[in-house]
Amino acid sequence: MDTYRNFIDGQWLLSDAAQTAPNVNPANTDDVLGTVRLSLREEARRAVEVAHAAFREWRATPAPARGRIIARFARLLEDDTENLAAILTREEGKTLAESRGEIRRAANVAEFCAGEARRMNGETIQSELPANFAYTIKQPHGVVACVTPWNFPVAIPVWKIAPALVAGNTVVFKPATVTPATAVRLVELFNEAGIPKGVLNLIIGSGAEAGDEIVGHPAVRAVSFTGSNNVGLKLYEQCARRGAKVQCEMGGKNPVIVLEDADMNLAVESTAQGAFGSTGQRCTATSRAIVHEKVYDNFIERITARAEALRLGDGSDAATEVGPLVDGKAFKTVLSYMDIGREDGASLVCGGTIAEGPGLRKGYFVKPTVFVGVTPDMRIAREEIFGPVLSVMRAKDFEEAMVIANDSEYGLSSSIFTNDAARIFRFVDEIETGMTHINSPTTGGEAHIPFGGIKSTGVGEREQGSTALDFYTELKVVYVDYTGRKREGNLY
Image (cartoon, one colour):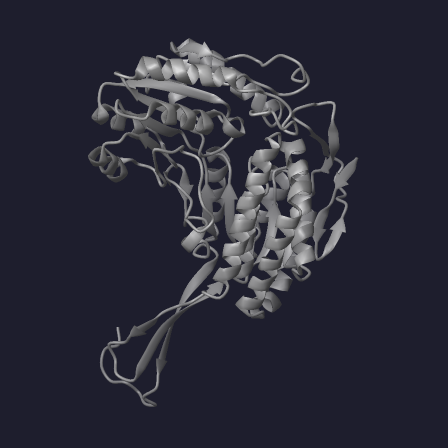
């Protein structure tokens, strides 16, 4: 059994902290992978200081050379897919197929970012003055903190760390304490790829101590965070007080609209995939289905049958379609929403209880759940549950469906199922989300395309794709006056 170590200045170091937490397989709580020591403030401070000291030399490394290291990491990550997928499934709970898919996504992101190292271009701008050359360049901030969640413990760290390093920043990486093994393996692969000492540092610890020390340190000039709104907004406030740059990707309550002309087989399968895949533990998961009244009963009958047919189990079993929730805290939270939904007046048509059966007794398994009779004011229609729970609402027409879909503080992802081109384009124009899908699930994205949301979902620049480096660089404007003499007049 491992005791997970921090990685500081190119060395794997055991924390001096006395407080520990077990790393438990959520599919079988008797299976303990290792022990986490919750790092001390002093250790987090040391990681920041090391990153700060390494910045000058890393910044001076040509961007294409930085990109080659990230490209090597991408290849190493691909080669390690089966090993890392097994680790990921064992400590987070998702199926092996989902773990492999996440690792492929991460490798694609790293590959894309490596290419961006040769496209860190500015622009030349025509000056209004004669004999004056104006242009822009992109420069790194310095030390960047990457604070990541447990639900995508490979992909999300990669899509933060890779662009941060390509841009010339040094990084302090603080993963969720629930998924330390994947974090350690990622840093091992970055190190094997040739990241210099001090450029990438790993601290495993609580947000209240290690995380607070990192994001509050004056040498940390930018913080990229993915997680809950409660934590993200506090972090945003903390960083704003000292003028640090912040990027927060937070909650979602993603709607799918199913209209009367939809391909019902496609709509049901896609909604089930979005609502119950990864056990609903995705910020892009389908949480609300808004269904035209003409097909409402048909949709409910089909989505219920699909949910009840899903096979639950240990993600390492190839036959498993839905794994466990990540830990006891998530388990209790999701189960509490079953009571909340019933108390608010919604009706359960399937699920709503602990899953029982062979191989499930020692894990955090909840049956895929469908609530009907849900109204927009109910908590299960407004709050992020982060589990395999779908709330179905009725709409009399497209206009009412749009009002319900936009009645949310969140704005991450959305989807519509219809064959009406006019309503498709109206939906695209009017839906209040940062990403949307037509006749496909609310989940999914591509490595070379921006990712992120609006409203309470997101703060700061988008992640990935053509926007990947925006957050991790500052734009500098340069004026070169080659007149060789003093200019006369008002120069603003």
